[in-house]
Image (tube, rainbow, N blue to C red; front, side):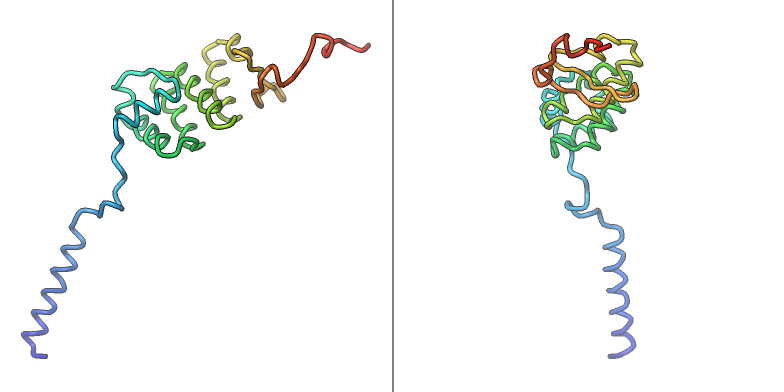
Length: 162
C-alpha cells in the first residue's frame, strides 16, 4: 500500500469514528417517550387526580411512565409518592400508595408511607381507620394493613384477664 493509500484509509477511518461519536444514540439506547394515554391510564389505576402541570413534568411524568410499563414497580411507587408529596399533593400521594398496595397484592412499605404522610397532615382518623382496613402497629410504627374481616376479632379479644 502506498503512502497516499494509507493517508486515505486513515482519513476514512477518522471520518467513521467522528461520525459514530457525534451521531444521535440508537433508538434502543434512548428512553422510550412517555405516552399521555399511558400516563392517564396509570393515574386512573392509582385513583389520582392531579393537574396536567404536575403529571406532565418530571419527576412525576417519568415515574408514571415507569408504572405504566411495570405496574407493580416498588421503587417507582415509592419515588412517585415522594414526588407527589414534594409537589404539595400529599393526600394524592397517599391515595396512590394505598391503591398501589391494593392492586399489587399488598405492599406494606407503601401503606407505611401513606400513613406517615397522613400523620404529617394531622389526619389521625384516616391514618388508623379506613374503609375495612386495620393498620397493624409495632413499636408505634405502622407495620401492615389487613382487612378487618380477615382478623375475625370481637371486643372480648381485648378484655383484660386480670
